[in-house]
Image (spheres, rainbow, N blue to C red):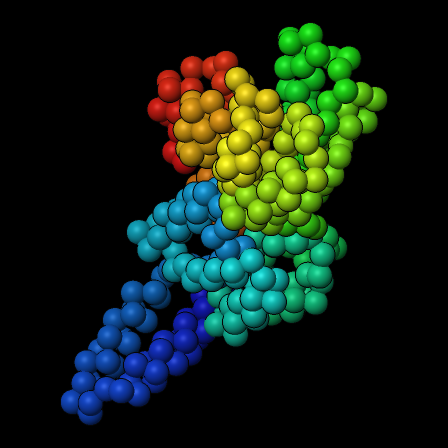
Length: 343
Ligand code: GYE
């Protein structure tokens, strides 16, 4: 049933493609095009069609996540993947999902940019009988609107960062000092932002001497991280700690601090805590620019492949599935640790 539905959908989209391709083509090329059409249709006959609406390409983490999913859902593994980059706009994700429904894909994989606003479009997918698998970020919708979710425990990541800071200050005998903190937040209302802010906030609330000077949205990008950090440095001259809700914003913050003549990292004046632990964060830690990065695992591809496999054979899957995570700091043998990392 699913497959009949998919083949029809793909035939429609190939038809559209061929029509477009045909616009500028000479008459003599027509037979070739229809042979191509036949080939494509045959090739895709037994493949599982998956429409994937990705948030964007805003960070190294996102690039690793896209790559992991694209390299798992391949034709060799039995998939026909339609990838849509939403360029960090929820409306683009709505459009992509509605197109997937028109194309009659077998599954929709969605990484929701923010948590709210999904009820209508996910109800449309449900009405069309297409299972939705949420990856990375969550959507605040009734449970029957998605099959399952895979991603990170963002609150634990935030708490882990808070506890790390607690220990770090204690080790330096600074546990009673007044500590001024600023936070570069990720895209507001995204699960990663909400969870990390909440988790760190819980540890913050236990310390009367920790002062959160300001929390500012820097949208998970390096450029925004730099811009926001520049303005925070102009406003406050006594920042002790920067909590950056991803590595790319932390890289921007390092640039801003260095350009302003300041210093950061384990030997500098400003302690920088970050999230994701992408490869470039290892470089930054080894260069002594940031202190610690709390891991967020982007390698969702294999798990996604396994989940779809289970669903295809009529099995059931856990509604919520967390990835395993740890953290890294400059006291560790980072050179050695990074050797086994894929991102
Ligand atoms: O931390 C950040 C990315 O949702 C976990 O999004 C993801 C976050 C990740 O842009 O780098």
